Image (cartoon, rainbow, N blue to C red; front, side):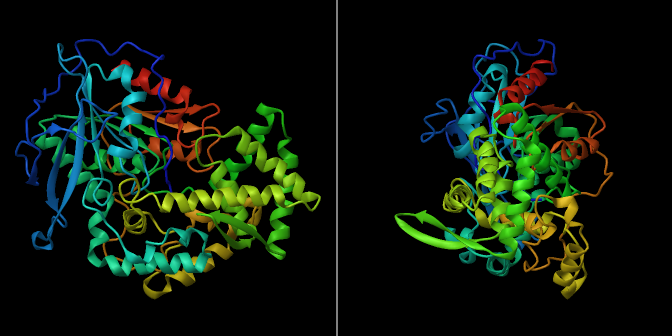
Length: 500
């Protein structure tokens, strides 16, 4: 259930100015800027803010931080710092209509520096009466960083499956108890500490990708502090998406891209991909990846192909790239692997660049600390039998459900390897932040799914919506992962806020 989002999370649509909600909406507590930043212990004591001096794209932003316990059940475990920035509403002459708190996904992606300007730009039409609260989750961005030596080399993205899993497991060993202290529930608890310290009564939650997991967790644990939620590219807290659901979404997306662009034929493209996958499964080739002026040669097999094709339909839509998948598969039918090598090489170089972004943008250790602690295991087994249970479950899958790839290649591809955490230390507290059917707040919830998304398709969005008693699911045409980066998706989000 990997849901990385290191891409633009919100697009600027200033021309799409919508009227804001009516003046008699519930009034939130107005915040007053102060002169010094704060690093107070977790409490309800007021937090102070100071002008941010290093956010030129957010000139009115006010920055602060809060010190919270690493482990709330064990005060002696130490503390960690969580950074935040507030962008005040532009119209100070009227009462505020709320505070929007977004998260761009990851896990492990920075909100303040990486995504803050994009959220402020995209949401500008409703930020006249609303504050924007940007929080860097513990372990990433401006918050106290979480790192591990085992995952420090970004070229690990070029390694094989076993080497990656071993490195992830070693990271868990190196982090020790700290891994469990960076769970989604811990992130949500710090978010609520910041809310309380700033005197905010309720939050309008806005989650992209993994942010939908975080915001659902916050809403479940703090229902009385949740005013509304927007979940873009959503999946539920208790279900996985990288299996047959994602493969079916990939087949649909390829078919739709071909129909809409008229530059390929969907059934033919899928047949070509299936033939290429079969060939590479039996007879792998190689691909060259250019990194910093040096060439690295890596195997080109079905697993690598599934990773590249899956990622092409798990990000913001790129029609040229997506049509290129079909044309590259067609060329491979005639024995020409050059286009597919170009596709895979580009994919791998991007994966390395993501890993090399640095903790200010993306904290890889925080990513896996959350994923391996919170996400349900694909085929759970007890104790030392985890890997054996996983292999039995994987072997029982029907390849037909995962076409054009085999079940094994699709289920273990790239960043979406369902067995990535098999070597991670199995913490006793491991498990989803809440169970299926747990009570959720009866507040307005908008769930957006892209019809070209093979990461969190509309079926996953429906699962996410089913967690709430009052959720609307909107499938956005020509949108991928996440719909908030599309014009249609952002228009729908602005309408949601304007109606409140």
